[in-house]
Image (tube, rainbow, N blue to C red; front, side, top):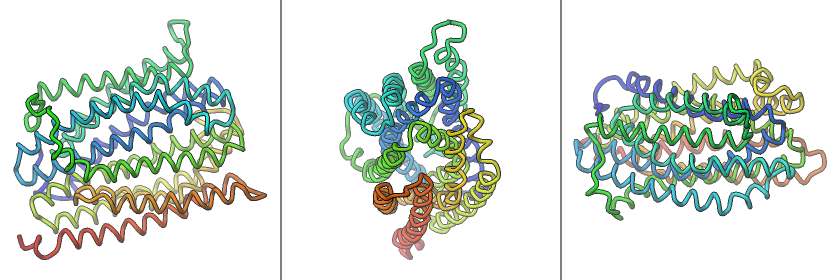
Length: 450
């Protein structure tokens, strides 16, 4: 356990953000490694894997629901010097992770095909998406266990073990991807199915490593079977914080579905270009996400310890850091967007779509960094409903204009990206205003004087 209620806030953010950025980069490289080999299979395969990968947003929503509640409550318990409550939250998180894994498998295999048929540009793209998803779902289900354990560690201020495990799983994925996708050494290429299987096996390996760490190394929180009986009161506490955060990702799933549906008339090359551009954008977001993800643990411990000045400092420092990083990345995307996309495909039409996407969408990077940071503070304060509200406004103000434009003559794919930039800017302004209001409400004179 690391005490984040003492010492320099900027140092704490950097100390947590750097390992988390490396860990998230590793996680993103799962998809980029798969995409590199899948790109050799053609546009339909690229688009299909990208479509299948959108289901990840539903799973991310559920993992956020689990992880956000776990981080916030454990961080607050650490700040209160209450290890008993921290352990109860962790073990109930493990129980919920098992339940969510079962629901993911049932929902994915039961409804995944219907969803992919509804947004696929053509039969070949849809078939590739279904094949990929069938083999990727076990890995998605296992993500809950990884999130539960990683979130518990983050709540106690520890992030390096998670980073190390993620790096080892990446190495395994890099080894498996060419073997399973392209058939290196076996002569039996599995194509997009191999991409899904490689990721699933790598995640399973990561779960085993994290469990071993908790059994052998972790001292503050650990597995206690007597706490595995469902405790509905603890679930309620966790979900009160986690549910809105999870619903945010469900809305982002809807957001992505709107985009794929809107651009489906432009063909598989357009969906492939957006798929590659979107994966690159996810990788670009990692530094700002790492800064934002450090905020719930740091601010949360200080909320628990009743140190409002340090909570406010966490917000201000994190906003400054994330904005500076995202501005630099905006300039980079304006400079060579085609080079970034061209690293994954040689198809001129796909590169053109992906490069245009990055060139336009990069203008919302700073705003997106603000959104990430405010979301982290909402988690620390124990109220994530305002964050959900701002995301809902973004999705509605994006979906309605795009739907209208897509049915107008002269509709171009660039219109989709431009509307997205405007709505993200709106969300950033709304999130900042709401987090300031929530801090004034939660960190008022009575708390400051305590």
